[in-house]
Amino acid sequence: MSTDPIQAASDSGAGEALPGQPSEEELRAAYEAEISRVTSTDMILQAVVSLLNIGGHRLGLSSEQSPATGEPSRDLEQVRDAIDGARALLPILERREPESLRPLRDALSQLQMAYAREAGTSAPQADRTGAQPAPATKPAAPAGEEDKSQDAPGPAQSSGRLWVPGR
Image (cartoon, rainbow, N blue to C red; front, side, top):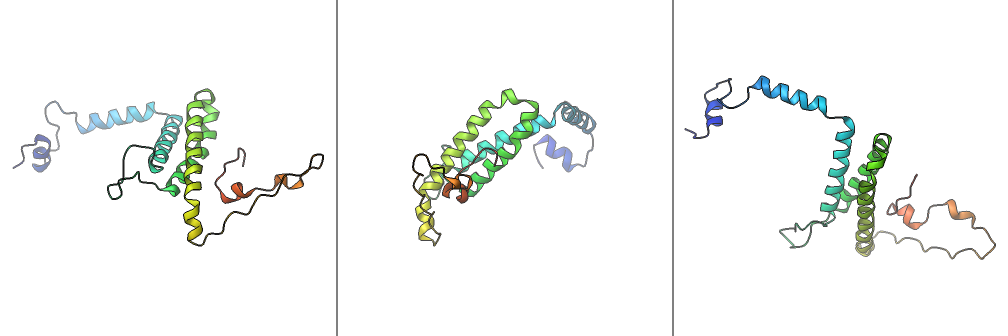
């Protein structure tokens, strides 16, 4: 027999609440009141914050370490997904609360830069696995001559490691 009163009530099949505990109807009413109070903007904002936190954690910026290696655990694909998800949601928030997004934009920028550094340091490992190295950049056009290839994506853009506003 359990000494936990909640477990004992569920074991006995009692459908009524214990003294001092809210009933199922009260819980449902409280949940519905909370849902009616929360806006979609609140949920999107929470999603962006969560994505940035997960991205930082998966990049190894948190103090938690992998039990196997003793080093921070990294998953660059999840970091990239978190960055892309946060970037996709920010324009929706800008319609409602553009003035309050500066800290989120700053956090996203820092995460993007940390991701780019980390992806850059893991690039030599990718070369050993058979990945093609990025093509060398061409020298700048001489003064007075316009470089017509400026609209074409460079090696960093085409590799997907560089985020460009509006693209």
